[in-house]
Amino acid sequence: MHPIFKSNRRLALTSIALAAIGFIATPAAAQSGWPNKPVRIVVPFAPGGTTDILARAVAPELTKAFGQPFVVDNRAGAGGNVGADLVAKSPADGYTLLMGTVGTHGINKSIYAKMPFDPQKDFAPITLVAGVPNVMVMNTEKAAKLGINNVADFVKYAKANPGKLSMASSGNGTSIHLAGELFKSQNGIFMTHIPYRGSGPALLDMIGGNVDVMFDNLPSAMPQIKGGKLKAFAVTSAERSGAMPELPTVAEAGKLKGFEASSWFGLLAPAGTPPEIVSRIQQEVAKALATPAIKEKMLAQGAIPSGNTPQEFAKLIDSEITKWAQVVKVSGAKVD
Image 1 (cartoon, helix red, strand yellow):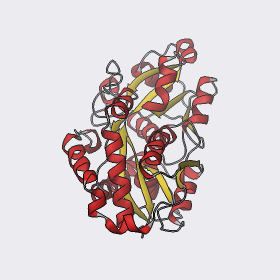
Image 2 (cartoon, rainbow, N blue to C red):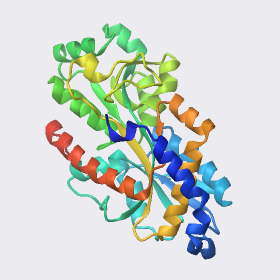
Image 3 (cartoon, helix red, strand yellow):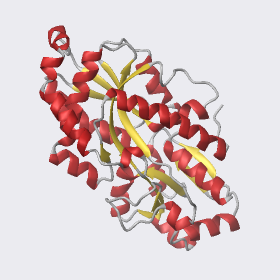
């Protein structure tokens, strides 16, 4: 099982305990006056996707905790690199944060020929907010028209019609892109990749029937699945999702042993941000994610809340960079 999908009970209890003593443990932060103006959370994708959904779930809780507005700012482009680079080059004063992803901080270092920032050196990890599976979906009407009812049907059609299917993603290098590339390589099929500036616009074209398949994050795709506009075939995680347990995994449905391409999302600050500020933000996020209302809402959407420590999040980033380098190598995906 991927580490971000393991139980977070011990972690949540530890984080709450730390939060309870937060203002005693970090007197420097209390005396610094931070925050005394609005804080920006940069989302490196267009509105409507899971990165945006999670940022907008966390922002009001931080606003309540700190008494200053935490404002979401969407800065899409280059698979999340545009927004991430903006934060990397911002002052390290706690007023500009990033809702980073497995793409910006796990995949892009391997898939992009040139990176404008270093995902490990240029950021101070704060906390993992949530991990989510991706889900393989098609436009419901198009799937019915083509006679595609499951993963096996899809692969059979793709092999019989090479190059006729298109695959949408939220951008080059995202987990949505890499899940599709891994699926293509393991099944020996070809689909034209069409990157968008986030899941939101990609989903709109999926619903409109302009693209054929997508391996979207489950929280952003779920409303369209439940509304009948998208047909879901399988989730990309190692195990079935508690939010939609009726869906098989891609490994099950496609007989692809070891297939896994899950996503995660977490808050980061520019490198050099005072540790006491990083600690205070982590503590408040952990408290918020542990509340029954937010936890249950996230679980219902297919997201697994975390709230881990900066050190634990940094270790996850390091391990994910190594993992995805191998996936990129196998898939052959590259972006100039």
